[in-house]
Each structure stands twice: as C-alpha cells, then as structure tokens.
Amino acid sequence: MNGKRILFAGIMTALIGFVIGLGVAKVGHPDEVRLRYETESARRLFRRYGLLGGGIGFVVGAGQEYLRQAKIQRDQDEKSRNK
Image (cartoon, one colour):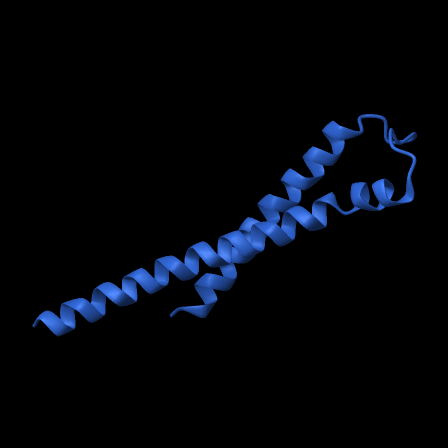
C-alpha cells in the first residue's frame, strides 16, 4: 500500500468537498447578513457546512484510493500465485 497516495487523494477530495460545502451553504443562505433560520443549532450547522464537506470528501477519497491500492496488490498476488 502506498500511504502517501492515499493521504494525497484524501486531501484533494477534502478540498473539493470543502468547496462544495461552502457552495451549498451559499445557495441555502444567499443573504449572509440575515440568516434564514434563527435557531442556534441551524446557525452552527450553517457555519460547519464546509468542514462537513471536507470531512466527507476526505473519507470518500482516502477510501476510494485504498480500495484501488488493495485491488492492485490483490492482482499482483494472483499473478505471483499463478506463475
């Protein structure tokens, strides 16, 4: 397994997820001065959309790269057994 590739893929997809989270927050609340939802829990969630998107992006990207690395390693093991 190549840990650096897994970490890199996780970071890149975390950045993409962060930007998507900020975009969702902007679409959900176009008026930044006055929030549409007045409850404290909704305000906290609105402020954390970017972090949530980044966290989900990191997990998805790192998991996807891990599975890709595992498949490569499995294919190499099968080739060595068949020889």
